[in-house]
Length: 421
Image 1 (cartoon, one colour):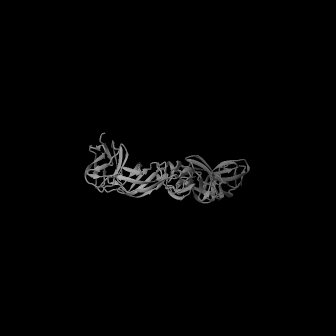
Image 2: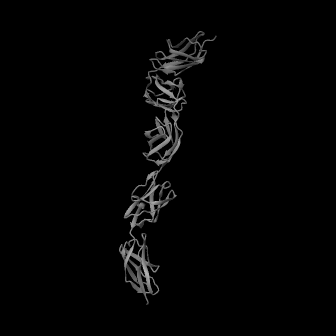
């Protein structure tokens, strides 16, 4: 029978103090009686099969050859192993410390001297390394059963073990989110409904972790992290694994750039068009502190509402899942006007061919946009809130009604007499 053949050792370096778990590969390894690193014997030698042996390195220094001895002889190939001065890795904690028997969940390993990890074992099964720094490693756990030791191997050797338990806990399942969208600044509370949610260790919005506020079997509430305007997947990780994803939408805050009209009656009930951006998901429009009604979104840049009653000049704001528009934009101011009142005309009469000036005295006349004599438009000028001067149009002899109009509506009627010229 031919002597054994050694073709590789993994890892190929380790701590001078020994204790590094290595896997030796080759052929004809069945029945191995000795494994040597230079002139020193390895410990914990386990013949896995004819092509693989696991063992722990003895103490040593420099670079030595690894040999295997079986009843058929000793291997002669040059397979080097290097003792390094790199400190061995030390593990301090796992998060989570348990997971589903199917694996695939992410486990965070904390410790020191973890740089350059070549292998993370869950028992005898390797995990897939995702990230690796001196103080932390993240891995995807392999499948397994029972409680196993997690170890990390670096050029400095193999770490101390930490226990990890495979559980039959079912993976979490998500049914819905409320709300399904929110501001890019985050910080809003999102409730996640589903099943098997107990013991959640991570809630991710895309790749960003949320802050878990409450956690029950069927419901989790979190403070959403910030994110750019986009759709992201929300997932929950528990000891049972990672859930199915549900979409969440980051919405940019709305803006109000203009209104039409900018004024109206203090009784409200008139239609106002709001112009701006990000208006599609509008849920509330306020005139000062008073909510408008009959919100009709025409496009992302335009909507109409029925103005509430009010007084003075107020800021119009729009609220969507992305937040509330900023107060103080010039185009967002709306002025409430009292209904126009005309008390007297001076003179109260004039020639039927018209052309004479008539002064309307009353109240709330500043924003006058129309003066009519018997329904005929007259030219006019608003002098003050209490006075408008109009030029009487021609008319048939007799009495007609004069009235003024502002954005707040029509004034009362007051008679004017056309005289035969």
